[in-house]
Length: 211
Image (tube, rainbow, N blue to C red):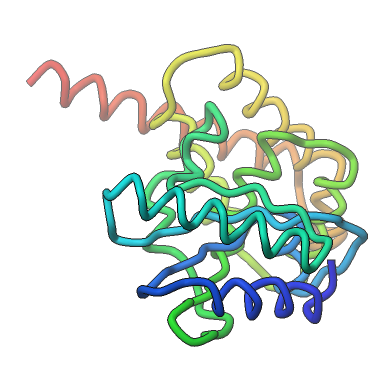
């Protein structure tokens, strides 16, 4: 998915919206705008209208369907993309950056640390490559990422998905850490810090529940 294709999709959609609308882009399309381009046939996004009117949502669905036909780009979207995975995206709506504005449509990109939660949840080979490219390009601190990802785990309902997400993170640190943070990166030390962040947060939660 190229930036030009993304622009075309949302410029076309902007012609269809009648009220102020915010889009938060995630997935491979967001990765493209964050500096890593790979083949992708769709766009994934949250779309916020500020309205609870079911008719407004139906109009929006119809508009997106028309734009899909016009642009030949498929869309996956929801009012709240936090529902797409068992792993919480936390307060993701507060962690976005504006990309462009098309009329009444404000197109934003999910910040890389929060965007990475979705990639780590799915963790296919292409997701790993996306993660390496974007995290390296934006020079994100490993420790700040691990603290955020530990917080996402703690905020998520208990399920097998939590164990899988934790394993994905630890595998990613061991397999790809040096590609992002350099040859001196110590994956085992980072894994221990991640586990401590998980344990420390869990202890605090238990104390809070018992007070």
